Amino acid sequence: MGTYAVTGSASGMGAQAAQRLRAAGHRVIGVDLKDAEVIADLSTPSGRAAAAAAVLDQCDGRLDGAVLAAGVGPLPGVAQCRLIFEVNYFGVVELARAWRPALAATGRAKVVVVGSNSTTTTPLVPRRAIRALLADNVDKAFGAVRVFGPLAPSLAYAASKIALSRWARRQAVTPQWAGAGIRLNVLAPGAIRTPLLEKQLATPREAKAINAFPVPVGGFGDPGHLGEWIAFMLSDYADFLCGSVIFVDGGSDAYLRPDDWPRRVPARALPRYAVKFLAFRRRR
Ligand code: NAI
Image (cartoon, rainbow, N blue to C red; front, top):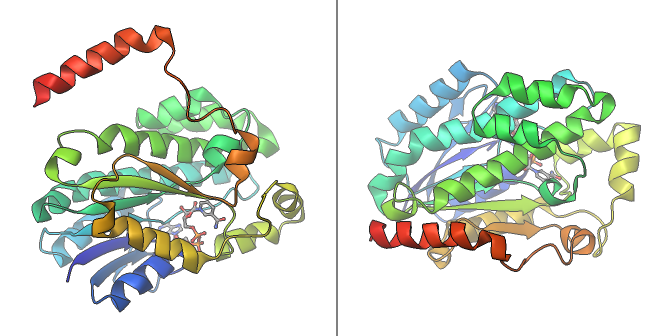
């Protein structure tokens, strides 16, 4: 049986994933603000460093997998934007980086990062915020979204999840991750009935926006079902899954962006392709 680190293990999808892992006989080292093996605040650099170290200590430097589900939603207030960046982006990336050697140590670890379908369905997300996060610059990312006033939290939320998904896809295929036997993938849920969504639904303006959002299958997703998806993405069946973003969103992304993806390779991308092919041949 394996050892898994799960952030956000006290609630919602993280709790569902932890429950399934435990039921299958695995050991779970949960990380959360409360009710977890490791109590830590992922919104600060020192909290993240302490959480990363505590998990490495408890797992003796060997992890069979990790679920990075801790996150906060786009609640009103410009101040929320910084919290969103700190928890949703740095709270994933810094822990994943710190745990990578422990994941590599077991030879076939799986990592599931919880993204969001806000990545492809939120208009006007400033590119500058995404670029700033990928460059580890939270101040610049905050500056890029704060000017949007009441829209800022939603844009910050989507920016945090876009940056996170790109970070994961960039890393997943490298010798340090795929080459070390680690499978790193992203789960992108739509609106799932968890305490995070309930908090949003308790704000009238948010509730109106959420209820007006097109979901072809109707309603909200079940956190238990998402727990199953995570468990599947951690299983041996996911050995060939690498750098993928899996949308489980009731069809919103397909409804709003049916022709944007998959996308044909344009002629102008050919030089970049050639460089990538050559670089990969040299790698082997
Ligand atoms: P949730 O609120 O039920 O669980 C999130 C967990 O993260 C909580 O246990 C919370 O204590 C923990 N957390 C928050 N801030 C933290 C901090 N500073 N330090 C340590 N732990 C912290 O929410 P849910 O819905 O299960 O969310 C899980 C992930 O799924 C999040 O990353 C969220 O952005 C994402 N997501 C959720 C959707 C939804 O509709 N519920 C839709 C798309 C993505």
